[in-house]
Structure formats: structure tokens, C-alpha cells
Length: 435
Image (cartoon, rainbow, N blue to C red; front, side):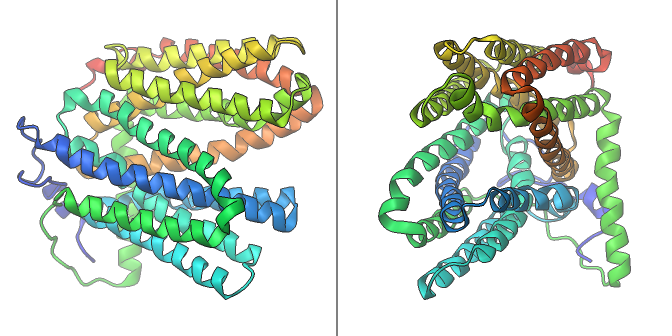
């Protein structure tokens, strides 16, 4: 086995030019390192978003089946939900550079196989769904590694602003990729989009290597049986949960975030129903609402990156939840002629959303010991991944029964209640005082 938990304690992640477990120096080289990694991430997210939309259109045009689209969505989140915590433990065992490059190359290899199958003839839908599943496995390792990187490179006082930059890179790449896919798919088809994704993953890998990140020293190899290895991995995974529980404010925020995601996740799915059904709009109107929300999210990410939000980051989280709830509630109360008001509410929703997740990410990066960051972020992602389909299932039943506007009213009201409950929890309210 690569190492034991004792070795993990003794050999935390390190960055290039720093001793293991030390923080980066003030020379500013960390900015260049992050710029390299984020530049590659932007290209990778852009090309991945293009391919994801291409897969969706391929499934839609081939099957015209809502159940197949639902299955594809399930394959996209299931690996993170099932493997997130274990993947985080593996991330903590290995140098981050190796994990980031390995995950990107794994995703590129999956895409390359899809490209070969597509060039050989018609691409069956089952192969696309399998590809989505394996690509999501790669993402289950890449995501916690990427989130664990920033606090090992950048000074702690910049973490909240950098969380805004990270969200800007990821949301910007997703939005640009979705728009580019609309132009590319009718002209070049799926094969070109797959090839572009392979190129994007390779570019991201080169960017990580160019950043000259270095991991902790090689851990001693211990020969153990498979059963012993599995037990050790399970113990290390459980350690991440126990470490997070020690930080009561962060642990409480985790479950408040689960409740928020339960309510939040169905809203985007109900946007088209609100536009086309309640406001009797067109498909162009539905697309406009999505664009307005996305522009608001980019603006919110830029604002978070520029200001860092409130000094008490728990207040940023609570205020974001409350503002999002007010906007959602107002959208649900609009009459059939209130589409302009719906666009304004969509912009406010997008603007407020980065202030919910960004400060939480920075708080975990700042307080969780570096050797546990992979496990904690893997656990966080796994729990949120389970919340999303649960919220979608509940909203589907309620929205069909009472209508999308009533669901918006219920969701907005629930967010306001959740904001109050979150602020009333002392460990969250005083989270900046927790060592």
C-alpha cells in the first residue's frame, strides 16, 4: 500500500519550492502557478461543456426519450455520489499534480474511445451513457484535487477572493461552452466535439505541468493484502468525516448546504416550465432567462473575487441564501404578464449564488488541515450529489401537482427559513472565531 495514515500525517501536500506542509511565500510566484492551472481549467471546462451538450443533443435526437436523458443525468452524478469520499481519500494519498494530470488524461482517453467509435459508424446511445459514467469517475477525482490545490499555493487571506475566481473560471467556461456547442453541433457533429474535448484535457494537463507544482515526498510502499488495503482506505475515508466534525461550524454548514441544495437544485430545471407555461413565452424567451441567470452568476463571481464578501463569511452565506430566497419567492408571485420581472429575479438569483458556495469553500480550505482536504471536499461533493436528485424528485411530484409558480413560492420561502435557521446556529454565526 502506498502509505499508512501515520505517513499521511507526517507528509502533507507541499508546493513547488516549499517544504511539505508549509504555506507559500509572499514572493507572488503562487499567482503565476494558479494562472497556469486556471488557464488550463478554463479550456478544459469549455471543451467539456461543449461535449456534454453534444452528448445531450445526440441522445435527444437519437431517442427523443426523456427517460434516456434522465439516465444520462444519473450517470453524470452517480460516480461523485458513490465514490466522492473514497476518491478524496485517494487524492490525499497522492501528489496533487499526479491526480490532476491523471484525471484529465483518463477523461481524455474516454473521449478518445468515443471518437474512435463515432468515426467507425453510428454512435450508439448506450456508449454515450457509459462514457458519461466514466468521465464522471475522472471528475470525482479531479474536483477535490482542484479544490485542495488553492490553499496549498496561495496565502490564506486571499482564499475567499480566489474562490470567486475559481467559480468565474468554471461558470464562464460552462456558459461559453454551452453557447459554442449550439453553433458547432449542426455544422461539425459530435466527432469534432469529442476531438476538441480530448485536446482540452491535454491542454489542461500541460498547464498543470507548466505550473511546476510539486507534491509531498514519495511515501514508502507497504506490501499489504487487498482486504487490508480496503480496510485502510475505509479508515482514511472515515477520518475525513471525523476531522470535519471537529469544526462544528463547518459541519453545520455542510448539512445546511444539503438542505439548500435540496431546494435549489430543482429551480433551474423549472425555469423553462415557468417561461413557456406560466408566462406563455417562446423558446427564445426560455433561453434568454437562462442567459440572464448565467450573466448574473458571472457578475456575482467577479464581485466575490473583487471584494471577498463580508468579513464574517458566514454572513455572506446567509445573505446569499436569503437574497436567493427573496428572488425565487418574488418570481413565483409574478402574474402571467410578469416575464420582465422574472428576468430581473433570474439575474438576482445568479448574482447571489457565488456568495453561497464560494465562502464555504474558502472556509474549508483555510481551516481543514491540508492532508485532509481531499477527503473533506470529496465528502462535501458526495453529499451534495445525493441532494440534487432528491430535490429534483420531490419538485417533480410537487410541481406537477401544484404548478411551477407555487413551487417557486415554496422554495423561496424555504430558503428564507433556512437562512434564519443557519444564522441562529452559534457555531456558524461565530465561525470566524473557530481555530
